[in-house]
Length: 164
Image 1 (cartoon, one colour):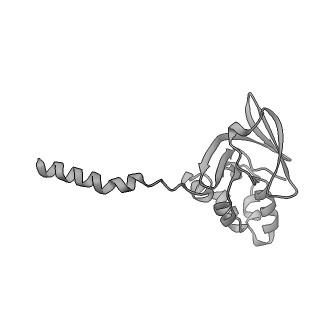
Image 2 (cartoon, one colour):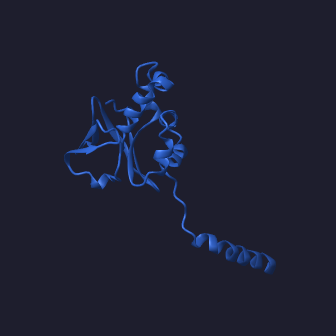
Image 3 (cartoon, rainbow, N blue to C red):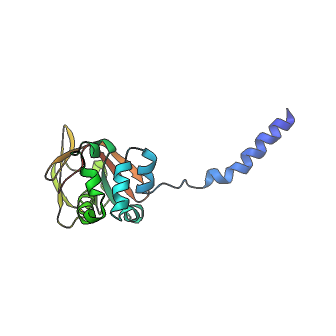
């Protein structure tokens, strides 16, 4: 019994420095990977050469379509976008999903707000009302999960791929 108590105390003392260290948060890409529902988005970001940007740029907001949102696009669309010759089009689409500032759900005012995206040709219209938060471009997407934190920004999960 004394040996068990001694081992328990020794284990607690040995572990205590680890408990005092702050936990490392994951970046946007790592957070999306761990969720397991953004495989198409991550494949698209890699094909577009944007994965590193999403992993290292500070204070960004990503409106992240799920795999189901990509699957809802017309048949063959994703495969076509992933082709090297369509890289510019893919960059334009993905850039429309990223804002160069960290926007938490509480930061979004009721009514309509417009924010510039990483796609210099796209301003995203965000509507917040009693029904929730909706994004509008040529189509619309609803935020289904807000404020998924990452060490370099925030992810808001959306139910559709925004098309500029």
